[in-house]
Length: 85
Image 1 (cartoon, rainbow, N blue to C red):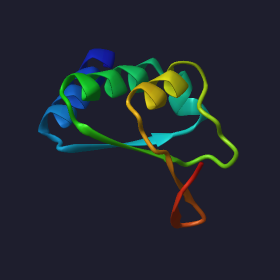
Image 2: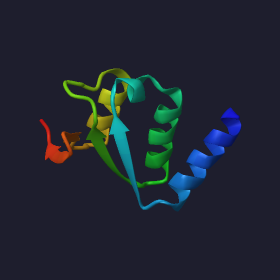
Image 3: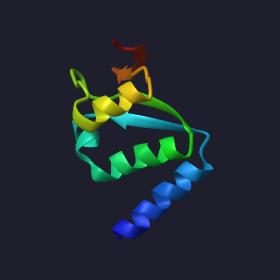
Image 4: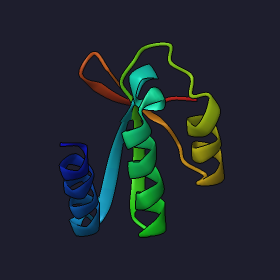
């Protein structure tokens, strides 16, 4: 099952031009999401990180990832798309 999920994620990234990351506490804890993010970079995909959890601040690998990739994190809160600091 897990292998199938990883294969599906890899195929989706390979077909994509842009990867939208819906980041939250759960996203930051997921090994699969981390692999997906790193694979997106390896394939040189454009990445749009969107914060979907109020008051969430990326930490650990996700904070380093967004800084190293020079990504601006947007927020989707209350049905609106906002650029967050």
